[in-house]
Amino acid sequence: MTNNEKELTLRKLPGIDVLLETKTAQRIERILGISISTRIARSIIDGLRKEVLKDSGSELNQDSREDFIRKAEIEMNAILESHIKARLHRVINATGVVIHTNLGRAPLSHLAKEAILNAAGVCNLELDLSTGKRGKRGAAAEDMLCSISGAEGALIVNNCAAATVLVLATFAKGGEAIISRGEMVEIGGDFRIPDVMKASGAKLVEVGTTNRTKLGDYKNAISANTNIILKVHPSNYRIVGFTESPRIGELATICREQKILLFEDAGSGALEDLSAIGFGDEPLISRSIAEGADVVTFSGDKLLGSVQAGLIVGKGEVIREIRNNPLYRAFRASKLVYAALEATLDSFQRNAQFEEVPVMKMIRTGYEELDKRARKFVERAEVLIGARATLEIIKGKSAIGGGAAPDVQPESPIILIRGNQMTAKAIEKGLRGFELPVIARVSDDAVVIDLRTVEEEDESILISALDFSLGQSVTEAASN
Ligand SMILES: *Cc1c(COP(=O)(O)O)cnc(C)c1O
Image (tube, rainbow, N blue to C red):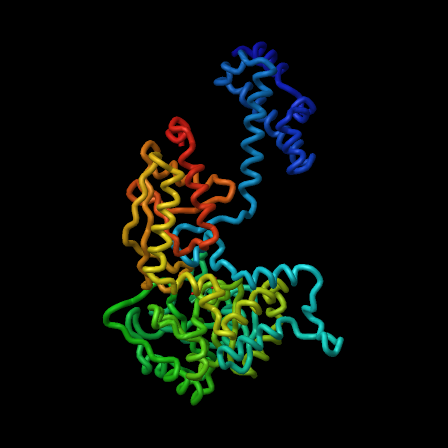
């Protein structure tokens, strides 16, 4: 294209005011506001101008002004779509991964959701309603944590990573911190225990080997500079076979004698003994406290099944010292977190967690019950779907996820969906594109649905999503 031709083509480009008058731009303006719709229109015109000025842009000189406007509208629609998709949406988790990090980890109980809604407006976060004086933020949730775990004190921060940093910064700074080589783990999201220990100002003293660390290894490493022994639960992997690691109680005895702090980072931690349903490896918080750990940290949104939070429990004096660390102010949790935690801990206190807390309910649901649901689901779905896909129930496995209990994989009946004219990938994409997105796995060219992580009341929506995703035309599916 000659410069002259380019010049002529550029003159056909619509102005921002013209684009802003299109139906699409008007819609964007209603949804995202005038300043964003203007910015989008400007960026599209700039893009078209660059396209024309490129040597390869010659095909554009055939375009009329109307063609340019049509192209711009298509692009504006795509941008609007991506703006909307980028926001947080409720989705249905049909993956069978109970604590799915990409899906916000633990789904909250109805009671916890209600509590968040109640606290969202004005609430008595730091006001004692009986005296009218200033109250302590989080007092009720901390009291519940104490009563459930048997600890003297409790403190709540934003997540377990913050809790670990706070404990180390309070007690390990400037001295030596002992840790087993088998526990120098990375939690995910680049949270590496040895790096965090160093960043907290502690000198790392590694003991033992990857698979075996004995009580004597810890004893021999203690010096006059030792402040703390750190025991980390390797949440997201397991060393099996020839392994050894001392119990909390044994370490507590040494720590008491030598006046060293014993700190356990329990990760997901269990508030009650879940060994009957396969979670024997998860540290029981009350047991660690009873055996003499000075301080224990764990997550609010893993096995506890509540919001993102870091829970710290331990000896009264230890918790007081942590609370007085100026860093605590930087890590403190919001009223919404306390509200949800109060409600979740309340379910545990009333021993109603298996009915009320979704994570607890999902991990305990048995094969038989899920199988009944799966059969009913397939029956209902088949009526609607007809010949567009075949559905089959097979024996499979769910996962706990969230870096918790990697060795526990509850057996589940899983539903395989094979499209008669669509690939599994296309069906999966359709489910994800439904007005209430459904997240499912794909395996061996079948879409896999695991009802363990689907609330029973959402099954009808899932069936509609399936109907929607299979309803796309074959050509559209092929282009995906
Ligand atoms: C998950 C985990 C953490 C991090 O907890 P978050 O709440 O995600 O910050 C820390 N330590 C251990 C052992 C964990 O398993």
